[in-house]
Every structure is written in C-alpha cells, then in structure tokens.
Image (cartoon, rainbow, N blue to C red):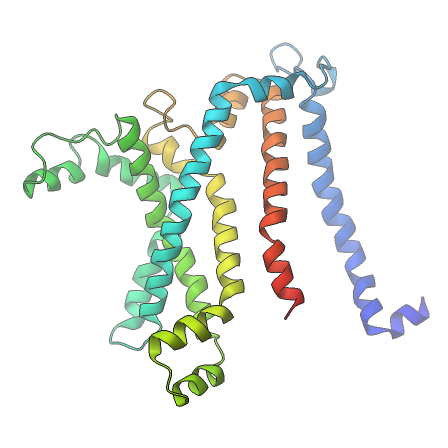
Length: 298
C-alpha cells in the first residue's frame, strides 16, 4: 500500500475506487430491478408488490418486438433525430462562425441566441401549441401576408404535426450546438492559422483545411450528445399534439409513458425500456469509436 501512495498514477487510481464503486452500485441496482420487472407481468392492481408478480421470462420482450405501435414510435423518433440533429448542427455552427468575429452588440445577441435553450421544454411546447393551433399566430401571419387562404392544420395533420414538433425542437436546441462550436472556435490555436495566411492561403481555404480538422472532436461530441438527447424527446410532442392525430407523432418516450403510467403494464414497459437502452448502448459504442481513435492518435 505504501508503494501505491508514493506512485502518483497509482494514487490517482486508488482515489477513484470509492466513487467508481458507488457509481456502479447505484447504476446496477435500478438496471437489475428493471431487468427483473421486465420478466414479470407486474400490474399494480393485481399484485401491489413487484416481487409477488408472476414471472413470465422473455415473454414481454417478445411482445415488445411484436408491438406495432412501439416499433413505429422507434422509427418515428429516429426520423426526428435524423432530421433535427443535422439541421441544428448546421445552424448552430453557422451562427457560431458568425459570432466568432467582433461586432457591435455581440454580448446582447449572444445572450439572445442562447435564450431558447433556457426555456423549460414543457413551457416551450405549450407556447408552440398556441402558435400552431388553427387560430394561432402562424396561420394568422400567413393569411395576412397572402401566402395561404385557408388555415393550415399544423397540429391536426400527421405530416404538418410532425414538422411542427421538429421545428420547435430545432428552435430550442440549436443554441446548444452554438455554445459548443463557439467554445471550439475560440479555443483554436492561432499559430497554424496565421502560418496558413502567411503562406498565401485564402480565408476559406484556411478555415476548411486548417480550422475544421482541429474542430473534429468538438463537432463529434456535439453531434453525439445532441443525438442521444433527441432520442428522449417527450415534452414537445406531448404538449403540442399529445401524440396525435392518432399515434402519428408518438415518440419512444411517449409510448413508454402511456404503457407504464396510463395502462400500468409495468413488466412490458420495463422490457421495452431495456431494449431501447441496449440498442442505444450498442449504437453509442460504435458512434464514439472515431472519437476514441482521434483521442489515441492525439
């Protein structure tokens, strides 16, 4: 033990052991309980105590895979993420690039740009609901400008409803990308950039060939964090459409919420949650491989 205390690297590892044990302990207990409940038919009205529920094995997992609404909610959530994340990244990066320079009122406009991210998602969802209802400002403005004659069913048509939810999500989370990209741009070393200018490189060529490669890791982190967060989208579809019309805007989180808290199918909900968790772990593992490779090659 004395040799471990004298070695700085080993001493750091020794200090990490208690917190690692605590973190793993607090994470594994809910995971183990969820796994057990997922193999039971626990319904509170029938068996109040979860340990008294009938054990059904992998039956709930089979039902989850065969549940059409559950599978559709997964595809719909992935579609929302596939559209929103790239748009948010491009807009956030563009705004960060514009704000990288100095101009009058920069502090004020920077604060204004990040305000949407500070809004509580449930409150933001209600505001967008008021904007997109049939008699709301969105239709009123379009009619005033002569773009449309009849109101657009933003929240009553499946396509328009999904587009409205994605627009609200882009509004709120573009500032998140903006903050990360702003930090990345401000932390760029200036020596390689100045050397490129001295050698006669244009501003666009320097940005594309010198600055962008150095921003690879912050860009990957921003996209990964936003992609994981977008999979959990709940507030906007719940507040704006309630998952409707029908089930056309129901996401994974809404499906789990209804299954668990509305229909009280705790066993089935637990198995669905585990399937999603395992899928996200596998996808996340392969998604961060380029980031790990870049870190090793640093």
